[in-house]
Image (cartoon, rainbow, N blue to C red; front, side, top):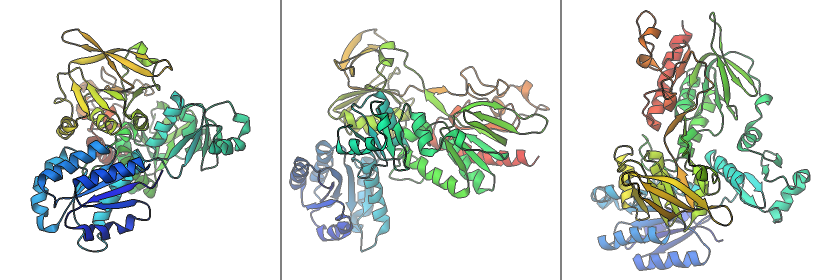
Length: 553
């Protein structure tokens, strides 16, 4: 396969754009065309020749009909590519108003002012972000940090790929008889036949029985790490709330440990593109946001122990310390933030559960979407995560159907996502509908689903090679002691939500404080939380002042 291409369509500013994109010619096949017909022909030529088109750059100087034809035509021709409109300074204000809705609805990924000279790094920062996201979600990795050797891409292999995608590690799957497969197996011949075998750049090679084993090999086994001292704060869960708390606590001098059972970023880390997070006008993937936050926290001194699920918590007595228990040992802390987030609820249909990993996935499973090119996909769920998963899947799949029990998405999904879904011709929404059955093809992969109209009770069988289940919040805090009160759904009670009989001298606890002094809760696990990335981040940051007050007593 040849180098990925950047196709630039401009009628009047070819010189300026050619000079601006000259810096990309070493790693991309940069093509300059003048009109819609040439752009379409160039894209077809590139794809026929084995190239991928990473980015279409469209100058707003075209006739408006031709311009919109270029926008829609590029999506139809190469739905996985990114689309960028550039505008000359003389018409930037006008174009900003004209194309604002197109950007908001996802018709194009960005609108930028054309470079006015050399070293316009703000422009190239935006281009770099678009290419970065394309490389992370579409392109096959050039350098593989992890190699998975297996005769077939089974359910476990897909789970490993999904985990590696969430932690930002490029990975490849190779057959044992391939050149790469033979080279890896020469390093660990004793594991031949015990698939999958995983080889990583940190020097480990061997059979990998589950995702947790992979996490422990990449980041250290729990029993290899000792935390002997009593730390100021242990954060349980590295989702948005836990990451924000880690950054702010360690930046203010608190010794901080963050435990994460699986992947940094939690459920939010599976989002393909978050467009309404403050400070990222072109959006950012959940994985990128999580890895940047982790990097900030590491810089200030937070210690992350990935692969450490909390198994219990022993509250402090007589002014002592709290103890968080893990499979690999205990962590002692003066204060604890519970930020374990939530899991997706199970569908509860036995025939569907039997196909998990073979076309059925809980969560966005971004890595799996690449394998569904030309297939029909169903996404179950009406929240923002479901909308983001549908938009990402539509870059690859022939059709995507969002299934929700409610009549429509307006009560549960952000407006910008609804607009983008309505515009996308590959996505449709079936309200008042639920999945009641499903079955495999001859090789055991999902092939069909039965959908039920919840009002009429009628059933319809539809073809589906992919089913992504994003069914809402199921709290995961069974490891907490009973003295940390939860509501009837299992979410942790904090602040004024705690029953008055638990208040001290008729004064309610602080907003994020639980029924146990020195133990706090933030993010999706907290009763009454907004279930949004930004609100979870805010809670994680604001809890640090309460931690300071507690430690100062």
